[in-house]
Image 1 (tube, rainbow, N blue to C red):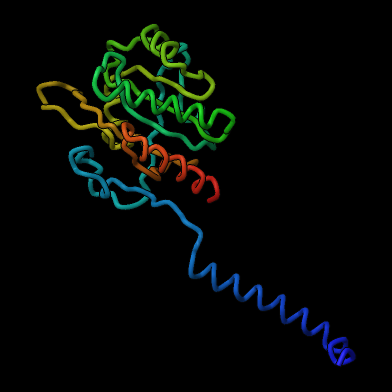
Image 2: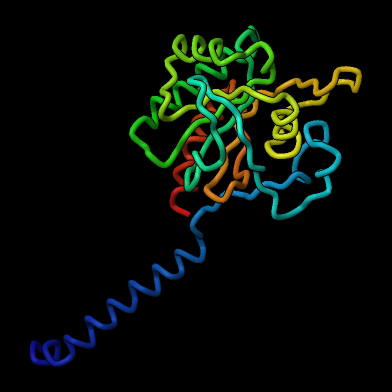
Amino acid sequence: MLEFFAKYKFFGIVFAVLSVIIIFSIYSVLKPIPRLKIYQPADFNAEVVDTTVQHIKKYHTIANFSLTNQNGKIITQEDYKDKIYIADFFFTTCQTICPIMTDNMAMIQERLKTDTIVMLLSYSVTPEIDSVGQLKKYAIENGVDDSKWNLLTGDRKQIYDLARKSYLAVKDLPESQKYGMIHTENFILVDTQKRIRGIYDGTNTEEIEKLLQDIEILKRE
């Protein structure tokens, strides 16, 4: 009996290895690696999408920009090259959802403080009020890490176009108020190819946890 098992030991090992591979392959097919959706303008509620891009169903990316941060530095897409980032829209004098959103963004900053791949980006929807000095004051009060989180101000039309045509995160105001903006509570997850990969309620802690989980999924992609 021992001689029989010794004779076929090699074949037994090969069979066992093949069995493990087959079982793993079947498991992988039944439970594929999760991937995040790539969002297009057509996926959003029309009220937050400029009419010129509402029809787009593929290849949507965030447009290039050139705006000024809380330290007076010009920030462009190059500062976010090869980075995953979370963007939102706010204003420093907002007393409703903005303080909650800022607190949650600060929490994300703390949770990801050693993560060099993920950055944060907040655009002011009242750039005429939110000067560099005002943004710096706000940044200090809210514990903003300058190396990880940029608060941006600058040309109102550029911010309006980014909000309505790129990030799809701001509702329009009547035409009588030129470039009027009502920002949403959304946090927008953007990948290294400048594509929108997730939208989350920035005032909801459960949504923030989902965002953090999705970041890990995106990093594995």
